[in-house]
Image 1 (spheres, helix red, strand yellow):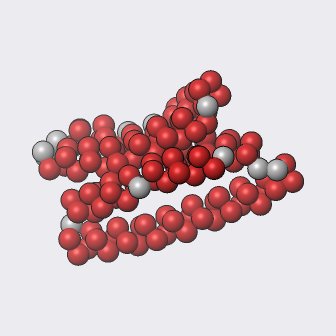
Image 2: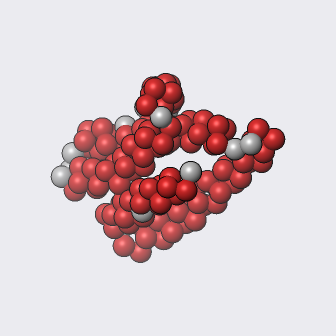
Length: 137
């Protein structure tokens, strides 16, 4: 919450100025960076660097959530906003469930290092996905 709340305020305001898609892209790009920095700091045995890397959670989660909801609210027909936001929440939660289960299995079987590299790889796929979907809208 220490990084999320300020990130929500800042990135919500920034997206008003430079556009929702640009801020969403920035937040998505920060996910793999956050995971790589975390595993690198952990391997170096520097707990304060791990804490600093985890502060990127504010950007990756806090910024992405607020700006995605704002984008969705503007992109859909006003009569469908409730449904659209419900579907966004449902599928975000399904993704979290699958991701947490999968990454938990990886931690149990192979350790935290591989888990963070896997999370970085999977999250990096969101950037080309956004680029492809943005061409349609």
